[in-house]
Image 1 (cartoon, rainbow, N blue to C red):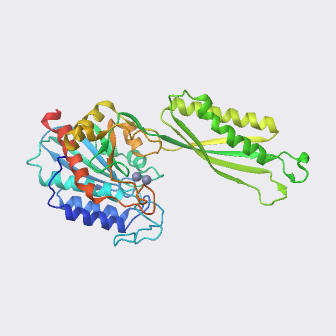
Image 2 (image 1 turned 90 degrees about the vertical axis):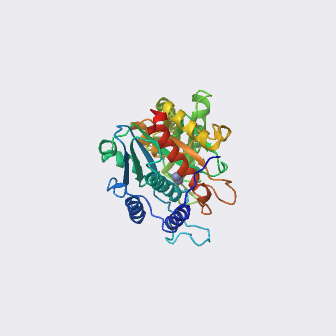
Image 3 (image 1 turned 120 degrees about the horizontal axis):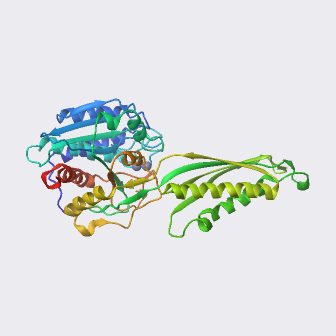
Length: 392
Ligand SMILES: [Zn+2]
Ligand SMILES: [Zn+2]
């Protein structure tokens, strides 16, 4: 494994732990954005602030080249009570960096510093945009940055993202072309029967029996409609109805999530859900309505840029450490919005064992500082590969 010798590694660890101790939720990453802007300025980068409220873009130019790439990190934390007791545990009760965005932010700062300090030695010609985005978790901060002009103000040929991944060993990376994270859509199903005395069910239409049939029937959507080699998930995650043990209620609400990689699969799943709703409604004499709310699109890596990333990761970690087996995942990622606009590639960097609760969104999670230099090296080598003479 060829990592970089970073004389400022201790500074990076201090920044990472400081951000971990001061987590901030979606669009409120004011302190974090201040640190990012302060650091980028100190490294001599031009700094732009204000996109999507707390977004920061650092700009590093070298030479006359017109080529440009974006490297993106997310800055937000999760609404979760941290259960770690190390000194850098969250000082903001109920907020926690349980997804490692503190690490992603620090890795990107490290790359900016390394490239700025060594720009004369490093072979690249063009512009690197260091994109620090708010609100990756659920709120779509990437989409807001794009709506507010990210790619018009900072024209770039490709954009790259990275996420730490517990369970992948340190020194390994998962890099896969095509769909890597799923598109997500929520649904809400309103079931209306006819309430009555629980001892006299013949006088009503049992909302709960219809709703229960529906929950089971929804499990046939993927199993019996989709090509067996395609992927989708339909999960019912909420059922709300009833208040008494002797009343059959009028209404029930079911909610859940759909995950797919392709628009045509999403379409097929939605139509199948609608058919089941109307079929079960007529079977029981109930009324059933369904609404879909489309959230993050699928995250899809472009072929050429993914090949470039595989080459960079292979040079850095060794070809056998560049995995194809962990991705795709049915999780979702708002970097999808950036990859919908620009070619690019999203990778998973091994965070080490996922044991002891060190899994994403777990209250015992912590980003592994040992992988900071690996992430920095990956970004730095990627800049050379994309903008250097070898990549020309
Ligand atoms: Zn997350
Ligand atoms: Zn995350």
